[in-house]
Amino acid sequence: MANNVVLLGAQWGDEGKGKIVDLLTEKADAVARFQGGHNAGHTLVIDGQKTVLHLIPSGAMREGVECLIGNGVVVNVEQLLKEIDNLKSMNIDIESRLMLSMACPIILPHHIALDVAREKAKGKKAIGTTGRGIGPCYEDKVARRGLRIGDLVNAKLFAEKLREVMDYHNHSLVQYFKQQAVDYQETLDSIMPLVERVVPMVGDVSEKLYSLRQQSKSVMFEGAQGMLLDIDHGTYPYVTSSNTVAAAAAIGTGIGPLELDYVLGIVKAYTTRVGSGPFPTELFDEVGQWLGEKGHEFGATTGRPRRCGWLDMVALKRTRQVCGLSALCVTKLDVMDGLETVKICTSYEYKGNSIGLPPYGADALEQCVPVYETMSGWNEKTEGIRDYTSLPVNAKKYLDRISELSDLPIDIVSTGAERDDTIVCKHPFQEQ
Image (tube, rainbow, N blue to C red; front, side, top):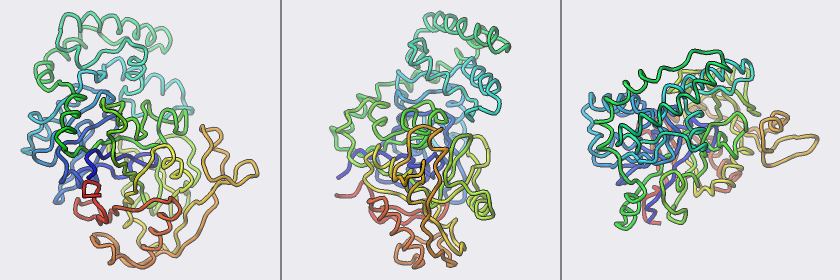
């Protein structure tokens, strides 16, 4: 039986991870977030009610499931409490089953100011960040000057550390970016009243996960963004500020890599990307518009429209290679309904050669031209289908080809936004 399951995005994010985590946690005892921050937006639709979670693990909607936020996650304390209060207004108790690692870096107002100032200064070369301070917060962590959740327990020491780091960053804001300094006292006064609520939720996430493993409990490790946005293996520099690969589940929560039993890669039936950066299969025609409109392709966090294109198997092979995927979950199959033909990118033309894996770095990927395989589409409706045998013949052929090209089984197919609009061929937590 797979006790520790990693679920991550296999593309550039927005693959529908939240729904799948929520679905699978029916058989889980805990869900752990291991990287990213409130730049992520996981959308859940249950009985017609839409909920977007940013920091809190998607297992929140399942009563009794413990929710853990690992050390790899950067936390905006004010936003976290707003999210908790929003769930509370829906009669969902989360505080009693939520644990934050004491090692989580804290996002502060100067991080947000720096994020916005940098993007503005880059102009057309902007990375396309959400402007929420994620990158600058991770920078402080790596530079060993960041404040962490555990620092909140000592108000005097926290205040001293805050003044020091704000002096450093305000100098950059004022002298280099010509922006207004962030007020130290206002920052301190805004955070301290929140401490009383946060501290009771702080704990040793690593020890908790070890204990759950000893008890043979089932844990879902939930990633944010997607592998192609990984700081090391993604389309650098148009990437996020953390590692989004499967191995980050171990680093970002404090468990050993051999404790991870199964890795599920979530992939849309097509491909989307938000923000800047190369996108070989991007469509600028009516099909791209069709996918965007029918798939409601707007960011759950920012509302930004997503760029849409055909499924890119070259990029997916890189994800499989780097993350050691056990199986795939294909989402938004229903968005493809009604297309006369569908295409899959099977290789790239790069500098006169055919390549089967994407080159590293944005500059090289920008030069790649996709080579497509064309298949017949289907006019029948797949939306809401919950049994694989009921899918249209050509839809099954499309899925079979994805499985063949990736050399991976497709364990789950999502056919709609609702939790139950899903075909589960094999549940990750079932007996192996």
